[in-house]
Amino acid sequence: MIIALFGPPGSGKGTQAKSLVSTLSIPQLSTGDMLRESIKAALPIGLQAKSFMSQGQLVPDNLMIELIRERISAPDCLKGFMLDGFPRTVAQAEALDNMLGGLSKRLDAVVSFKVDEKALVERLSGRLVCLACGSSFHETHKPTKIQGLCDNCGGVVSKRDDDSPEVVMTRLRTFTSSTAPVEEFYRLKGKLRVVNAFGEEKEVLSRILGAIGFPS
Ligand code: AMP
Image (cartoon, rainbow, N blue to C red; front, side):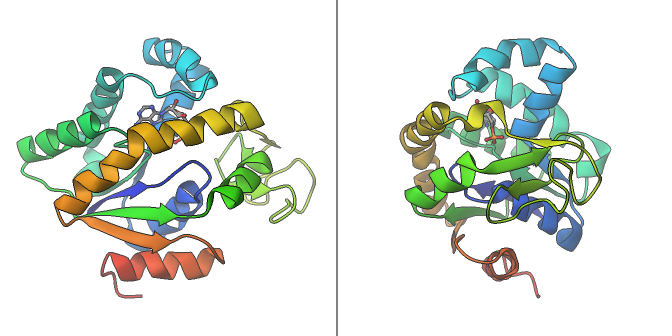
């Protein structure tokens, strides 16, 4: 199965992706995580992406398309994969269609996460992410058992640089202007599955599984 998780920053894509990985047994391909790792490792793509990311802007399409082209050809993607944060523009969506066509594969569904904007700002401004395993927590709604340490692996949790209030507002504006047309692109192809992403994590997970026709 090949699916894409689609939604504004803070809509819970990353959290749901972690549960979906074990339920569907396919890898999560998070372009945000891949870019952050490339920055940490000082790879050329990381150096090129860094300034766009720190300002909450999209990284140019050509870089993103190459990043994904290489990743989806890896052996662990043979039986399917879950895109998280890609495609974010219509150009990326079209490129993905072409890449998959070339591999005789196709995207099964795009799950669009719906959450109201006030909830998004609130989620992002209190978000804590584990630097080691990527698990997400929240200062008030989902605090770690031991302050500053991840419940799952004991790694250090901290706020992401681009979760500051000004950058969050830019990321949300970017989503509305560049990314929302992608939803229309998939609606017209009959691949869009809109899911109410507000509520308990387990509830949202079962809505997603229902939307993609996976027996739960
Ligand atoms: P995320 O972790 O998905 O919120 O992504 C963090 C940042 O990485 C975004 O604000 C963008 O700067 C960049 N990014 C991630 N995925 C993409 C993409 N598909 N296209 C362009 N920029 C991206």
